[in-house]
Image (cartoon, rainbow, N blue to C red; front, side, top):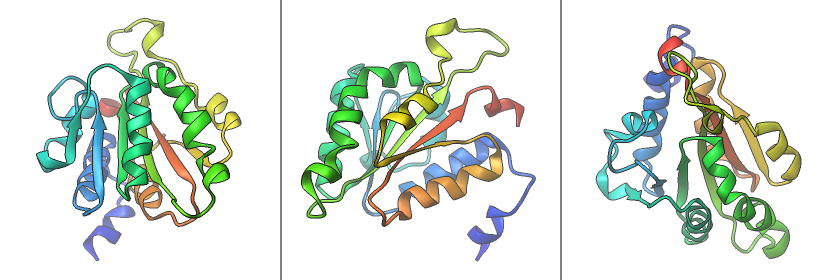
Length: 189
């Protein structure tokens, strides 16, 4: 009951809602988190995973195409995989796997295996320091236009975060989710 009440608390902070969402997912028996800086510090996203059981965190090298392939493979084995790409610009290296395999999986394999994937990515912060343009891309609209079985959800407000992650986890429609965070909002909202 308390969890439901918090969904409608409009005094939430952006970072706190991300952390709460990761802790909610971390308590689920079938979840696994993979990516860069999931077991070790390295990005702002790392700070949202501090209370997740270390056995659920799989640290990977900088190999985004491999990570996206592993995301699908782990999900085919009935894991709900939360695959973390700190920036859209990095996720671009995994687009072949995303578009040609994950998005087309349902079409190619039918209903026999239904992977559930949550991809977490972000638009890099520009304030107080601009990290240059290779870190601030937003490819949400382009990726959404290429996909038929993936929904891209932009997390613009703190109140949107927990319900979006909860929806992504509880989906029964065979649609996978990409949740897009805004780096500037970690400290601004």
